[in-house]
Structure formats: C-alpha cells, structure tokens
Length: 181
Length: 458
Image 1 (tube, each protein chain N blue to C red):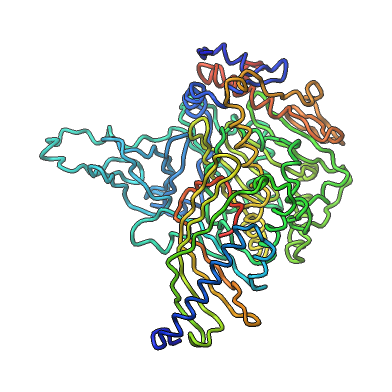
Image 2 (image 1 turned 90 degrees about the horizontal axis):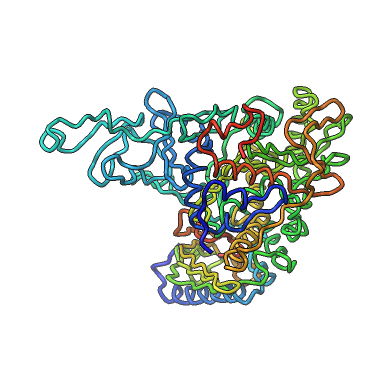
C-alpha cells in the first residue's frame, strides 16, 4: 500500500470516503434504515465491545473480545436486519415514538488503501463520532467514541464490510442502544 | 403530605388484603434511604461467580446495594468479600473492574491491604504513628456472611442472617436449574466473559417485580416476537417444549422469591428445540434425555424468569443469565448482567448461545430494550403529587392460588397459581411486596425468619 507516495490520490480518496460516511450518517439520521442496510456488505461484521477499567500495563484486557465474550454488539447482517425490521414494526416501544438522532462524524483518517489510493477497492479508516439522541420530551443521550471501518467497493460503490465501535463509557449511561453507530 | 415512615406505616403502603401497593415505595427518597438500611444490609445478595476469581489474587469489584465491594481470592485460595473503602479515609482501594493483585494499595495515603483484607502497609508507620497503630484492628471490613453455592457467590452484611439455603428455602429447586448443567449435572455451568453494566432510569423494584413473573407484559415484546430472534428462528424463545404444559406461577411469599414456569405433562417426552443449528439442536436434545433420566418428575419443570428477594433475577433457560438490580437512588438502577453456559458444551453450542444472548439481552438486546422503556416511563409518570395518591393494582388472580399443588404425583413447594387458562397472574408480585413490607418493618432476623414460627411477622 502506498498511502504516502501519492498525496493527490490520497486527498481524492479521503474526500470520496468522507462523502460516503456523511451520506451514511444522513440515511441513519433521516431514518432511512432500509437504505442504510444496503450500504452494508452481505458479510459485514459489526462489533461494539464493552470496556473495562483495568490496571496500567493490562490494557489488552480493556475491551471484551469479538467472537468470544459478551459484547454490546457482535453480529452480521442477519441481526442488523432484524434490528431494522423491529424499528419498522411501529410497536418497538423503545423507538416509538422515534428518537431524534444526529451522527457527527469527524477526525477521519485513512489507514490503508488497497491496492493503491488511486485504485482503492478497499480502505480501512479511523474516525471519531458523537451521537446525540433526544427522545420523547427531555430524554437525552450523548455517546462519544472511536470507530474503525473497513469499506469495500462493490460494483463501483463503497460498502461497509466491517465496523468496530469503541465507546468512551464503562457503565453504559444510556438505558438502551436502539440506534446504529 | 409529609409521611413519617414508622414500621406500621408500611402496612398501608403495601395493602395485601386489597392487592394494592403505594407508588410512594418506588419514588419516595426517604423510603429509598430506609431500604438501604433495612433490606440491603440484611438480605443475601448476589455478588459474582467463582470463575471470576479462579486464581489466588484474582479480584472482581462488585456492589452490595449502593456500596462497592471487592470479591477476591486470597493467597491461601479462600474467597472473601470486602467493603471497597480504605479504613483510613474511605478512599476506594480498588477502582479496577477486575484483575489480579498481591495487594490493594489505597491511592490516597498509601495504606495497603493484603487479599485476605489484612492491613499490611502503613506509610510513616515508624515516624508518624510511633509504631503504636494496631494494624490488626484496621483490616478491610469483611462482609461477614458469604457462600459459594454451585459457583454463585452470595453475601450478607447481617451476621444473624439465616444460612443461605434456609434463606432460599423451597426456591432451591429453581436456583439449581439455573446453575446446574442442562443435562442436570450438579453446578455444571460457567460464565461467558463480559459483564453487561448499564443505567436504567427507574426504581430497582420495577425490574425485580417484572422478572419475578410478569406474564402479563407480552405486549411489551410484540415487536421482537414479530421479528423472531429465538433459537428456532421464531418469537423470542422456543415454545414447542411448552405444548400441553401447564403454566404455573410459584411464589414463596414468606421469603419474597418467585418464578414462573411451565409444567410438562406426565407423559411428555423431550422435543427438539434450538432448531436454527443442527449441532445445537442435537446437544440440547441429548441433554434433555439425560436430565429426564437423572431427575424424573422434576424434569417436567421448564423454568422461566424468577427473582430472589431482593434484587437478583435470572432466566434459567433462554437466555441463561443473571441480573442484579443495584439501587442507585430512588430513580436510578444500575443493572449488571452475567451469562451462563454449560461447561462441557461443545464450542459450537457456546458460540450459538453467546450470539443469542447478545441479541436478546441488555441495552442492545432486541427483547429487553422495550422493557427499559416501560420501566423508565412507568417510574417517571408515578412521581407527581397526584400520581402518588393512587396505588398500583396487583389484584390479578387473587384468591386462586393453592399451597398444596400436586400434579401426576409431582408435589410443588410454595404457593402455586395455575395460569394455564388465565395466562397471567400477580401473586408472585404480591409475595414480593409482602416480603418487602416485612423487611421494612422487622427489627431483626428473629422477626424476619417467619417460617421458623410458622406464621407471618406482620
């Protein structure tokens, strides 16, 4: 991978990726959940670990492990689709009435572009997010953290192949996670 | 209206005769403070699982009521529970969730405690204390009563509390189903890594009474039932095993515990469940056959959700888990959730269950998300001056329970309400609140151990 050798291609790729991330955020915030599902590859991995307080020097144990431990989310497209279908039943009380949500996506960095930035078929990126959720009358949650995504081109368009979400919370302060990161 | 909560006041707040409970006991901060004294310092509370402290020096920071405690295994291999507060100035001596340590050193002034609680290090011991401080008197405060029952660690602050098995009484049958292997092998379960912890804006008794046997709240879960996340691809759990079964609500009102279950017919045979995966389906089928062989009549019990008074709830079957509702003020509950699988299950079964547990449970679980919404707004809509004047209704199924339940030669302990036709009842909740009233009014365990006298304290 030659990220550093082709700054112009990197700039264009970053622009392209950011536009995709903002488009994705808009779909979620506009409650266009079925269109959002189409942005996921069929083999997507979606992982949100829980986070422990551990001693300095033991930070490898900070997060619960994907595929081994209980995590907030650790799933693929089948379960993600079930989550969308549940919201669309209209009787999912935790999202009925629907929450008002804004995803702020920032600090986007491209970590890898395969095979090259100019011809990238797959990129891995890191970003930060703020999710503001307000529901019913005064109920408000603010969730902040880091996201690491792998995007893959499928028939010319970016699709999300992997999402890892590292929340900056230990005891989850939100009563539920009825939204997507 | 100012209320002074003398012990006698609690009989008005929990009106057993009419099946009503005052909203004050959920929203009133004076009653909440009183609960911390009268319930959480006297009852047996679930603290953790032995597999969390497998090796000497292993620790897990838990909670008893509002207070942080350390569950740890000392160098000799003995398990203890300590108040997580330095004896010098009260600082939390451990602010990690779990780990392994030879010593707990307080970050404030540096007092150090060994894993058996002994004070072993005091800075300036020679110069400032002139070697006159008697360190043996300043060990960490040890929770006096502790038991490891089939891997579950329970503790009580009250030296006079009855032994754990006496506290549990006839409810042991159901607790055993939770901790034994699915084939009935004694204590055959282990934890999956990762304890869910999250905040719910409601009083701790809402979830406790929901788990004790609220069959009435199916509408809460309509959306997940429509989607179908169960282990056979439908609903939220498997229902085929229940065919022809009686639906029973079992309460132990003198102790406050309760559960709901299905009782299979005498001639029932194991049926296939967990149909989404052939390996998992075969595993459970074989376990069912083995358990039937081992347990005979008791095998007929298909255990459901339950609560052990005051704040430990569990799902013994699908998804197999423990919940503790830690009180965090009258309006907040911190929920902790542990998940269990059979120790000897094949990796494929453990993985299948892990995925099912995650999609069912907790704040991201498709089923339980809707519970939290209901507890949240039931609580907040009960706080107002007018709302508080009106009691909640717990009258469903009053007068229809029996204390001598018998079916095809199987006798059941406790007070049993047959809800096969009714589909729901509230005797378990009534039992929970009648025990709550006793805890709030009784002076000590001599009064609380009502079963020894064969009568009620109130």
